[in-house]
Image (tube, rainbow, N blue to C red; front, top):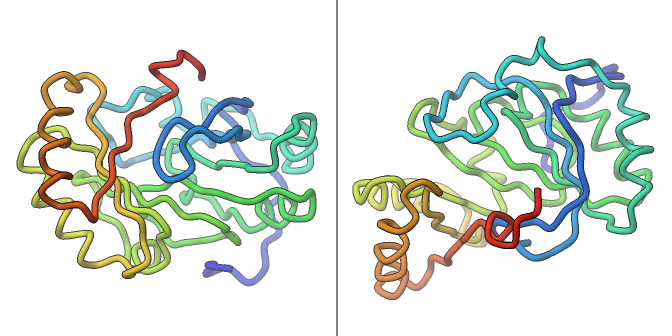
Length: 208
Protein backbone atom coordinates (compact mmCIF):
# COMPACT_ATOMS: atom_id res chain seq x y z
CA UNK A 1 0.00 0.00 0.00
CA UNK A 2 0.97 3.64 -0.46
CA UNK A 3 3.63 3.22 -3.12
CA UNK A 4 4.55 4.94 -6.35
CA UNK A 5 6.91 2.08 -7.30
CA UNK A 6 5.80 -1.05 -9.17
CA UNK A 7 8.97 -3.14 -9.31
CA UNK A 8 12.43 -2.71 -7.90
CA UNK A 9 15.74 -4.43 -8.49
CA UNK A 10 17.49 -2.65 -5.62
CA UNK A 11 19.37 -5.22 -3.53
CA UNK A 12 21.43 -2.99 -1.24
CA UNK A 13 21.14 0.38 0.49
CA UNK A 14 23.56 2.72 2.32
CA UNK A 15 23.12 1.81 5.97
CA UNK A 16 24.16 4.32 8.62
CA UNK A 17 23.03 2.19 11.56
CA UNK A 18 20.32 -0.19 12.68
CA UNK A 19 19.22 -0.70 16.25
CA UNK A 20 16.47 -2.05 18.48
CA UNK A 21 14.89 0.51 20.79
CA UNK A 22 11.70 2.26 21.92
CA UNK A 23 9.95 4.51 19.41
CA UNK A 24 10.20 7.89 21.09
CA UNK A 25 8.04 10.11 18.91
CA UNK A 26 4.58 10.52 17.50
CA UNK A 27 1.63 8.14 17.28
CA UNK A 28 3.59 4.95 18.00
CA UNK A 29 5.58 6.43 20.89
CA UNK A 30 6.48 3.88 23.56
CA UNK A 31 6.44 0.81 21.30
CA UNK A 32 9.43 -1.45 20.74
CA UNK A 33 10.75 -1.07 17.21
CA UNK A 34 13.74 -1.86 15.02
CA UNK A 35 15.18 1.26 13.40
CA UNK A 36 16.90 1.20 10.01
CA UNK A 37 18.71 4.48 9.30
CA UNK A 38 19.63 5.02 5.65
CA UNK A 39 22.32 7.41 4.48
CA UNK A 40 21.73 10.44 2.30
CA UNK A 41 19.94 13.73 2.90
CA UNK A 42 19.92 17.14 1.23
CA UNK A 43 17.14 18.72 3.30
CA UNK A 44 19.68 20.32 5.65
CA UNK A 45 17.84 20.80 8.94
CA UNK A 46 20.01 23.01 11.12
CA UNK A 47 18.99 21.10 14.28
CA UNK A 48 19.56 17.62 12.83
CA UNK A 49 21.26 15.38 15.40
CA UNK A 50 22.43 12.83 12.81
CA UNK A 51 24.26 15.07 10.34
CA UNK A 52 26.69 12.20 9.79
CA UNK A 53 23.88 10.53 7.83
CA UNK A 54 23.75 13.24 5.15
CA UNK A 55 26.51 11.89 2.93
CA UNK A 56 25.30 8.54 1.64
CA UNK A 57 28.73 7.71 0.19
CA UNK A 58 30.20 7.74 3.70
CA UNK A 59 28.22 4.64 4.65
CA UNK A 60 28.62 1.06 3.41
CA UNK A 61 26.10 -0.49 1.09
CA UNK A 62 24.31 -3.26 2.96
CA UNK A 63 22.40 -6.08 1.34
CA UNK A 64 18.69 -5.75 2.05
CA UNK A 65 18.54 -9.44 2.95
CA UNK A 66 21.15 -8.80 5.67
CA UNK A 67 19.28 -5.74 6.97
CA UNK A 68 16.12 -7.82 7.33
CA UNK A 69 17.83 -10.86 8.81
CA UNK A 70 19.39 -8.63 11.47
CA UNK A 71 15.99 -7.13 12.25
CA UNK A 72 14.52 -10.62 12.73
CA UNK A 73 16.87 -11.25 15.66
CA UNK A 74 14.63 -9.08 17.87
CA UNK A 75 11.07 -9.85 19.05
CA UNK A 76 9.25 -6.68 17.93
CA UNK A 77 7.77 -6.62 14.44
CA UNK A 78 7.75 -2.90 13.75
CA UNK A 79 10.52 -1.71 11.45
CA UNK A 80 11.03 2.05 11.23
CA UNK A 81 12.96 3.26 8.19
CA UNK A 82 14.49 6.67 8.78
CA UNK A 83 17.48 8.75 7.80
CA UNK A 84 18.83 11.02 6.58
CA UNK A 85 16.01 11.14 4.06
CA UNK A 86 15.07 7.54 3.25
CA UNK A 87 12.99 8.43 0.19
CA UNK A 88 16.17 9.43 -1.64
CA UNK A 89 16.27 5.65 -2.25
CA UNK A 90 13.86 3.20 -3.83
CA UNK A 91 12.49 1.47 -0.74
CA UNK A 92 10.24 -1.09 -2.42
CA UNK A 93 12.57 -4.09 -2.14
CA UNK A 94 13.25 -3.26 1.51
CA UNK A 95 9.57 -3.04 2.41
CA UNK A 96 8.73 -6.18 0.44
CA UNK A 97 11.34 -8.18 2.33
CA UNK A 98 10.31 -6.70 5.68
CA UNK A 99 6.67 -7.60 5.01
CA UNK A 100 7.68 -11.12 4.00
CA UNK A 101 9.44 -11.40 7.37
CA UNK A 102 6.29 -10.34 9.23
CA UNK A 103 7.16 -6.70 9.95
CA UNK A 104 4.93 -3.66 9.91
CA UNK A 105 6.76 -1.07 7.84
CA UNK A 106 6.94 2.51 9.13
CA UNK A 107 8.79 5.41 7.53
CA UNK A 108 9.86 8.79 8.87
CA UNK A 109 10.31 11.24 5.99
CA UNK A 110 10.38 14.91 5.12
CA UNK A 111 8.43 14.00 2.00
CA UNK A 112 10.88 15.86 -0.22
CA UNK A 113 11.19 12.89 -2.60
CA UNK A 114 8.61 10.69 -4.36
CA UNK A 115 7.06 7.96 -2.28
CA UNK A 116 8.45 4.47 -2.85
CA UNK A 117 7.83 1.31 -0.88
CA UNK A 118 4.81 -0.41 0.66
CA UNK A 119 4.20 1.31 3.97
CA UNK A 120 1.89 0.48 6.87
CA UNK A 121 2.58 3.85 8.50
CA UNK A 122 3.93 7.06 6.99
CA UNK A 123 5.12 9.79 9.33
CA UNK A 124 5.54 13.03 7.41
CA UNK A 125 7.74 15.64 9.06
CA UNK A 126 7.91 18.54 6.60
CA UNK A 127 10.82 20.95 6.66
CA UNK A 128 11.01 24.56 5.49
CA UNK A 129 14.36 23.91 3.86
CA UNK A 130 12.88 21.59 1.20
CA UNK A 131 9.12 21.30 0.99
CA UNK A 132 7.35 17.94 0.68
CA UNK A 133 5.81 16.59 -2.51
CA UNK A 134 2.12 15.93 -2.97
CA UNK A 135 2.41 12.12 -2.82
CA UNK A 136 3.82 11.92 0.72
CA UNK A 137 1.40 14.63 1.86
CA UNK A 138 -1.67 12.80 0.55
CA UNK A 139 -0.59 9.42 1.96
CA UNK A 140 0.64 10.53 5.38
CA UNK A 141 -0.83 8.72 8.37
CA UNK A 142 0.86 11.14 10.74
CA UNK A 143 1.96 14.75 10.41
CA UNK A 144 4.74 15.62 12.87
CA UNK A 145 5.91 19.23 12.83
CA UNK A 146 9.00 20.35 14.74
CA UNK A 147 8.42 23.73 16.40
CA UNK A 148 11.53 25.88 16.63
CA UNK A 149 9.97 29.35 16.62
CA UNK A 150 6.42 30.58 17.42
CA UNK A 151 5.92 31.35 13.74
CA UNK A 152 6.12 27.61 13.06
CA UNK A 153 2.59 27.08 14.38
CA UNK A 154 1.13 28.88 11.36
CA UNK A 155 3.37 26.82 9.08
CA UNK A 156 2.19 23.62 10.79
CA UNK A 157 -1.43 24.59 10.19
CA UNK A 158 -0.71 25.09 6.49
CA UNK A 159 0.20 21.39 6.24
CA UNK A 160 -2.62 20.24 8.48
CA UNK A 161 -4.94 21.59 5.80
CA UNK A 162 -3.20 19.53 3.10
CA UNK A 163 -3.10 16.06 4.70
CA UNK A 164 -6.08 13.70 4.78
CA UNK A 165 -8.76 14.17 7.47
CA UNK A 166 -7.70 10.89 9.12
CA UNK A 167 -4.04 11.96 9.47
CA UNK A 168 -2.86 12.28 13.09
CA UNK A 169 -1.40 15.68 13.94
CA UNK A 170 1.60 16.14 16.25
CA UNK A 171 3.66 19.11 17.38
CA UNK A 172 7.17 18.47 18.70
CA UNK A 173 9.55 20.97 20.34
CA UNK A 174 12.98 21.26 18.77
CA UNK A 175 15.16 19.60 21.39
CA UNK A 176 17.67 22.40 21.98
CA UNK A 177 14.80 24.86 22.61
CA UNK A 178 12.47 22.52 24.49
CA UNK A 179 12.39 24.55 27.71
CA UNK A 180 11.14 27.60 25.80
CA UNK A 181 8.96 25.88 23.22
CA UNK A 182 7.26 23.20 25.35
CA UNK A 183 4.96 25.64 27.23
CA UNK A 184 4.01 27.27 23.93
CA UNK A 185 3.06 23.92 22.42
CA UNK A 186 1.07 22.97 25.52
CA UNK A 187 -0.95 26.17 25.31
CA UNK A 188 -1.41 25.83 21.56
CA UNK A 189 -2.73 22.27 21.83
CA UNK A 190 -5.18 23.23 24.55
CA UNK A 191 -6.48 25.95 22.24
CA UNK A 192 -6.34 23.69 19.16
CA UNK A 193 -7.14 20.18 20.43
CA UNK A 194 -6.93 18.41 17.10
CA UNK A 195 -3.15 18.49 17.65
CA UNK A 196 -1.23 16.18 20.02
CA UNK A 197 2.14 16.50 21.75
CA UNK A 198 5.22 14.54 20.63
CA UNK A 199 7.92 14.71 23.29
CA UNK A 200 10.93 12.67 22.05
CA UNK A 201 10.52 10.14 24.84
CA UNK A 202 13.70 8.31 23.86
CA UNK A 203 15.83 11.28 24.84
CA UNK A 204 14.25 11.45 28.29
CA UNK A 205 14.62 7.74 29.01
CA UNK A 206 18.07 7.71 27.36
CA UNK A 207 17.69 5.03 24.73
CA UNK A 208 18.89 5.33 21.10
